[in-house]
Picture 1 (tube, rainbow, N blue to C red):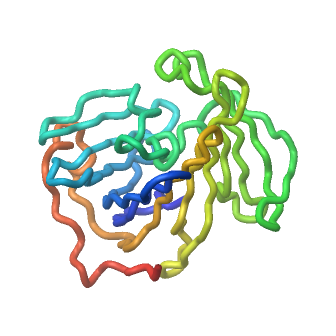
Picture 2: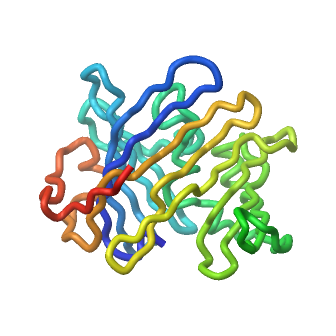
Picture 3: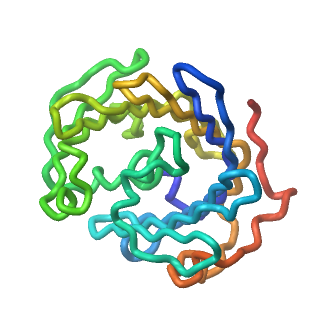
Length: 236
């Protein structure tokens, strides 16, 4: 739902291993819609002066993914859909960007469940043969959508062994103007129990966007971010 109108957001990505030290990465994304569906440009700073990782994700039924490093133009990279946003974290583009499984045609309503005290519709999504050929690590995805607001509140990715490999949980919503947007999301690896948390720290909704922002050829380029005075800072 956050792609209903243009959005810019800044975020923290917190690596939370079950054992060992935490690490925080910083990033930003622009989101919008085109004829194909939701589209997102994401830039993530890996730290230590390295060039930011760039992702361009075209959502919808004919979704695509491009990546860029070192300022190069975007390169089609469907395999990156299941790879960590940065090495060591649990989140992948499949988890946090316009969720492609919501467009898979093989979807079944499995029932209603209580998630955090609220009724949610439970849907089982099975990938197409084309998706499986490009990303063979996913057998299915179970998604829980709030029965009142149709908002995704939890999803479970099942691996090829038939067991839940990871769980995404919506922890908190924040109202910005007249809209509710996700503020905190967790992705947990069910085998290792390691987690990664994405927290939005600032957003601008409805800001004008450069028409070249979502051009794969310009993925390595630099675009002006919204003025600081237009950003809504989100409390910790």
